[in-house]
Structures are given as C-alpha cells and as structure tokens.
Image 1 (cartoon, rainbow, N blue to C red):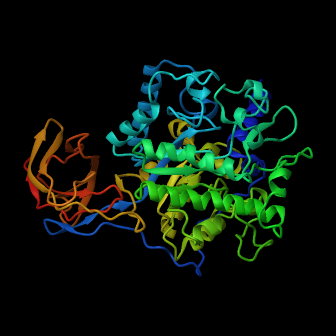
Image 2: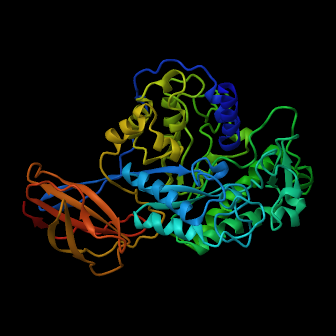
Length: 541
C-alpha cells in the first residue's frame, strides 16, 4: 500500500507541477550549509512605508505573502467534486481564515485548470472539480463572484490562476484525448483542428495548439472574460505552456501549424518560443487595456537556462524551460510584459543540480533595472522529504535569504501544505518572517490614485480590542486601510498592527496593549499607494 501511495503521489506531481519538478525531487541532496550572499551581488532595498505618528517613524513591511489554492484533482479545494454549494463555500472560507492566520495578504486560486472554468463562461465548460460532472451544466451559483468578494472582505488580493493551453486532464481518470468524454460545450469539440494530444498512449491529454492563432485568440478571450466580469486583482499563469517533455518517443504534433508559420526562416524551437511570447505579450497589453490596475504575473519553472548552455543562464544543471517548454521568461521580464514573476524555486539550499542560494541571485539580477517585481514560489510541499527537507528550518532559511536579497514576496505551494505545517516549518517561518501584517508592494507601472489623508476622530476600547473611528479625507476613496500604533513601552516607533478593506469591517486593533496607546491611520488605493497618515488619536488603559 505504501508503494502504491508513493507512486500515486509521484504521478500526481507529474500532472500538477511537471516532470521537471518531480525529477528534481528524486536527486540526492547534500547537507545544507550556511547562507552566504555572494559579495558581487548588490542587495535590493526593501520597499518600506515612510511617515510618522506622534513623532515616531512608522514601520511597515511591504511584501506579498500568498499561497496557491489548487482545484485540479481537488488537491486543495473543493475537498471533492460535486459538493453542495454551502459546503464548497464553507471550505473556501476556511482557506481564507488560514491565509489570515498566517498573515498572508494574497491568494492565488486555480480557476481554469484545464480548459474549464470556475465561473459561468461563454468560452469553457464548468469545471468537473467543482460540479463532479462533465456535462457542462451550471451548479446554480457563481463561485468566482463569491471567492473574490470574500477574499476582499479579508483584505486579501485575489489572483485568478489560469492554465492557458491545457484542454483536458490525462487519461484514464480524466478525458485524456477522447473527444467523446468531453463536456458537450467544450470548445475543442467544435474546433478539433485546435487540439493536439500529448503524450502518446493512455496518459494523453488535449492541448489548445499554441501555434494556431485562432486557438490562441480564443484562449486569451476565455481568460479575459474573467477579467472583465470580476473584480480580480491579478491574472496569474504557472509554468504550463508547451508541455514538459515526456519519454517514450512522444512528440508534440504541431506539424500543421508549423507549416503555416509566417516566417519560414524560424526553426521549430524558435517558432514555438515566438508563439508563447505572443501569448504573453498580447495578454499583457489586453489586460491593461481592459483594466489598467489588474496585475499580470507568471510562475515559471525555476531554471531559464543553465550557464553551461548559455553564459546568461544560472549556475544550475537542470531542465531548461527555455528549451524544454519554449518559455523565454527572461525576455518577458526584460521587455516589461509582466508586473511580477514568481519562479518556482522548489530546491534546497546546497542542492547540487539547482542550489536555491545560487538560482535565487540569478533571478534577482534578472529583474534588476526593470519594473517587474520578484516573488519566489516556495516549495512547502517538499518539507519532510529526505536530505535538507528533513530539517524544519529549510524554508525559514530560504525566506531569510530572500530578505537579504530584497525579494518582494513569496507564494507557497500549496494551501494544504501551509495548513499541514509539517515539522512545524510553517509555524517557524511565520514566527520569524510573518510576525506582523504587511502591506503589498507598490507597483509604479499601475495607476496612481492615493487617497486623501483620513481623519481619525476617536479610539475606544471594546472588550479586548480597540476600535478607531474615522472619516475618509478629500480625494479618491481609499480601497483599504493601514493602522499604526505607538506604545508607551516603545515610543520610538509606530508599528503596523492591522490592515483591512474599506466597507468590510471596522478599523480595529485586535491585540492592543493594556497601557495607553496612540494610533494613526492611512488609506491605500488598490495599487498599494498610501495616503499621508492621520493625526494621532490615543486610548487610555
């Protein structure tokens, strides 16, 4: 039984994360050494908050903290397909509660796992991971509307996570490449010339052909439908473009579209990269045309190219996404097509094939001089594996390294692993790195509409909390707020103690001191730009 479970877990990893990550997990890893920041690397300063409250300088971390909530195969949520609406909603709220408890400020939800949708879509059938069926019938409610509203009520950014080109899940459990098993309104039934099956055999799945311009336009339209209909904060892709290569002699059969390419001088590899470039560039432009404030980010495989292949590559020896998936991530960053990039650095410090401490600075240098923010995809799922992952402090040490390089955030894979807290690793890094709330990093590329200075009119104790009465200032209405506190015990600083969404809750300090305290309030726009602080208000013991 244990062998069966191990094999099942390995197959699950291949399906969800790609064979490159699973292959990385099989290497023997050396003992982790001390964290060393190379002397030739210039550290990136963190984005902080400025201002003062009652003469004390304010202190607030600015970093994105999030987790991926995976729906495919019901890995995280819903716990199983076909659940009643009330149970699906209740489970989702528990995930948000976990995010709040771990002091996250963003959540990345899998809303298009495989050519399907978690919203009523004119372009895709309802996801079977929600409804439990492949009949395309509505569950009778709008999950996306609910998910976005509840995330915002807790002041969490909602990033809608899409897999652009995946059309089905692999057989034999999924539809595979069998058109008869698709939902009746699946677009690949109507446009079979858009579909490519890969790999050969029983584990095949269908892909929308990236080299077919009509298929690409349809895929873009399907995702932009969600941008237009819902108040999402970000559009997010992971690392699935062209599929990870698989053994057995299978080839990705795109001969027909390759023969129709406009530039006949392009090799197949260069043409495939151009196809993915076009998708990324067009999505970047179309998102901003539709809603300029919506962020666009991608979470690629952690190795672009190895420096043994390309002097511009990282000091690593693993699968290269540039060549294996035709994903030129470095170009997307340098061209400014992304607002943020989240490389999946699911390797330990000291790992010989891809040392976290060596691959991370490559990404730091890649974003340097651009306006693209660097977050890191953290491999919480690996905690407890052999080697360095047996140590409960591996992720804690990685986050410490992120801090030293000025990385602007982390996203944890996945929600279930954050909940599991194996070896106490999540509690450890939460205590050491997420001890208090954090504001989201500002993005210069996004619209700038900071609110006017709010008026804090009174502070009153209500049971074990302190509530701040306030009024919005002149100018744009704040989307969210930040509350700072000066304690009599530490009068030299004003610490960020709470954040919230305007209209969803009162301004409350959940853990005030018993002694006198002084508060100042700021408002923020949806891009994280902050107003000046209010005049101080105090509360007595």
